[in-house]
Image (spheres, one colour):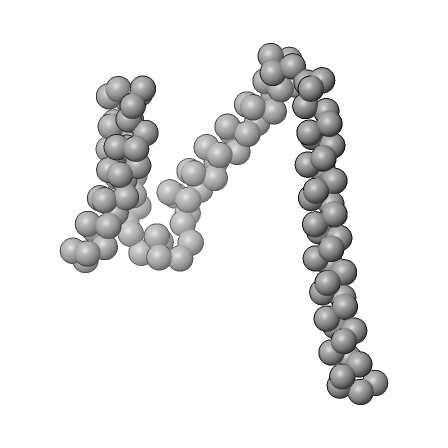
Length: 117
């Protein structure tokens, strides 16, 4: 095959892959929209899905703190745990309106460590 034909075939395969991914994604979304009127938010399956989702977020957060990848791995473990504890302390001081201050606490402390290091 010539280079032009190989390039066209490769480009066609990429577009086919992208189209299949889009079709799968939007088909699932359309099914979700169609079924959303029939799902009760207080049902047992919905509670289970919510619990599994929270557990996955908690596990990924702990993995990121204990076994980070990239630049975060250069920060000592004790400091990552300390910053997490301080952020949680800010969050628990008044849970109604403390999400942004807790996130800012963690971000600014980590940034301060990076600047002073």
